[in-house]
Length: 225
Length: 265
Image (tube, rainbow over all chains, first blue to last red; front, side):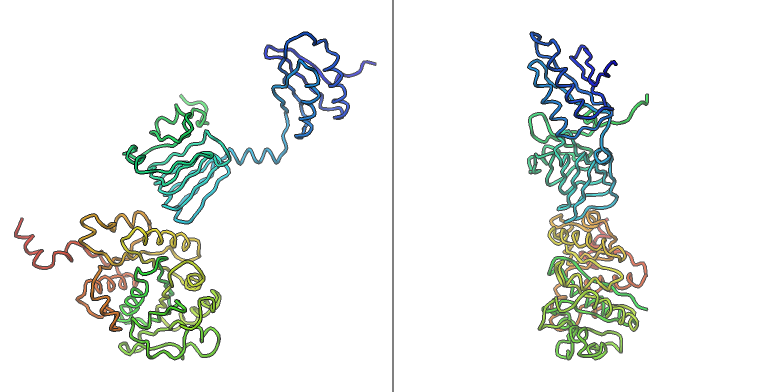
């Protein structure tokens, strides 16, 4: 009887792809993976990048770690990526929340805090001492005169855009910019501006029109002419 | 069934109590039956401004704790025939002596007998404020043309918007027309766009407001006084009339100034 292969190896121009069977038990798969990695005549070759694909098997963090460990038992293999066709519904929901944009209609007044898991669109003003926080970007159709914190969970690509950018404090990821008089003078026209994290590590302010060049990935619109 | 209006500001010293006294008096002058409630327990003032200090027997806490009936505690203003009453605050306890539920009950009872129940709110956003707004149907926010007062007004409007009452209305008090037209103080437009709520009226700064308060006779009794005109206009707007906003220019120039301006053309 021909034993079914639980681990198949394919060569691509980017290195090896290890496809792990998703029907067998996890222990069987690991055992065969260990054997395969050891027996293959890979000695003498230079280091090879390996992409692991687990198919429809969900591997938790510890299992992914174990798979990587087993592959690294061979001195020539280096795991570049572990991917899977499945994610947990919890993770999926989190991703949806992170990608969606929440809309707040009204004025955010002194002492009020509005927080969003994804992007945040405010239709109204943010008054002094009012605070808007979003894990994604912040877009304000009105006057931003308070405190805005975009990329609150570390997304450094997040931006803050406002019809009137007159904030007292701007924060992107963990960088804080206090809008001093100097900056206010620099931005003589606070209309239609955006703040982003510049490559030099400081928050920069530019015209809204520059945004499509600065952050091309912000646009999710497909098609059009 | 009457209406309960709370007069609040957040910041202290912007003229909540003066506004309460004057609006109450102005509404009474219009023939309405008005009850003023001072909720600033421990720091009562409204009785002094109305000149009713020496006639207090029972107070708000006595009513709440059942030591007397509501009508026993109400102090009648003798200048008006059954038109203006005051429920004074207690001076010997603190603001925690009353709960919002008790206030609500009391105000519902008073609304049955009065056209307007005006609630004078203490400064701050703590217990006293919560008690004051508990029974209110509408709110009036008082501010002055100062950034600090406007910031606090913004905060209080934010808190009021979370309550189940009508959107608050704004009164800008103590306007010094010279300062405002020279740009040294915030102007009416700046304040209303910043706070973005409806403007109920403006009141000019006037020395007589203080002297009238000291005499225990609200300034609104003097029909010629510019501050009194402001308060009377606000009272008429509360009653539903549409009264144009007082112009700052004319009040500054005076009659002869206007005459001069006509000939100077």
